[in-house]
Length: 442
Image 1 (cartoon, rainbow, N blue to C red):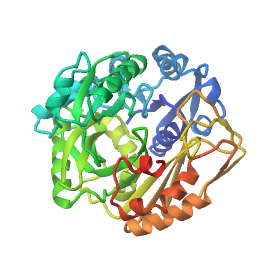
Image 2: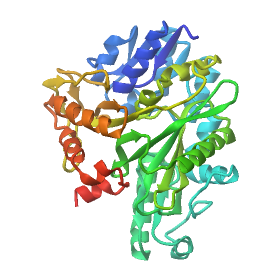
Image 3: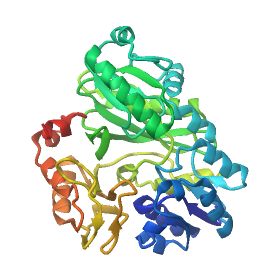
Image 4: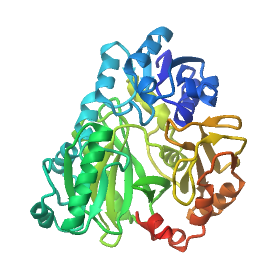
């Protein structure tokens, strides 16, 4: 195992990684911007280095600053968390070239799956189901191509992620508008104007498979997570197991995810994201996230496997600590954001009260505490509230109590939305899809 690990991230994920790193007896090194100096993860690390001002481009995305911090602290490995540099193939390659260990998949795997068109073609070749769509960039809003695929079509930024640059078109007029919007956002956020079209599955569920590529080349699947509760194509609630996936479909999805990982020589933690037609009990590949996911705690709760620990072991070339994967019970994660609970717009500000729920079946991965300031420079995720139950009914009951007990004052939060969700008949029935939040706000 490494003597030291630099965590190239901030907030709750930095704090979560630091917790496991220190539990393994490894020195944990944090990096922080001027805006984050007082956040809990900075104090909890064994050593912390200021890497720049609040703006991400001048701190967390500044690869020179991160590498200089690694040299100054004699770090032996770098864990990128999620977001920021986690899916930056050039940075992963640089880390290795400078003699450090990258705690993530090979740069080649990141590159292969970072472009949605390339990823789609690779997955189809590997025998993973894909939706009808284009196999190369679409130069303009080609109505003939869309008609050949069949409306509605999803217009997607090839180099995108996080739901940015995605929209649905139901006819030719909407196609033109969606194409221009997607291209503009693709250029702005990803520097890649390439657009692809795919058949859109209406009333689909967004279900992902957690995979882990081991040091010996084996790829294993650790179960699925349902991520269908979304606003603006971005996840806010995740649960496992999915109530929309039957045993036979689950078996096919797990096998396909393993093939996907094997096709790119995957190592470490990642997810194969799919769209599921719960009526037909069928699925298609959506994308692959070549990093640890925000929602990894629900998988940890039902398997008892510490995914960050396994990432470290794989990167060190050591065997993992589990043999069989037998998920038990039900887990749900609620992403607590500093945002307006009706319009879901960011709400920065000073946190005056922070009271977390606690209990044997409650887990809170928090990035903040009372006295901290939520700034407008970063994603407004405050914490992840996770609950566990022997079944979904128990998990939902615990969730109601935990949401009610979680008090944050200062910035607005989406906790009232979760109270609303936990009383929604559609969500409670388990028969919901990615349009649920839109219907709640219609």
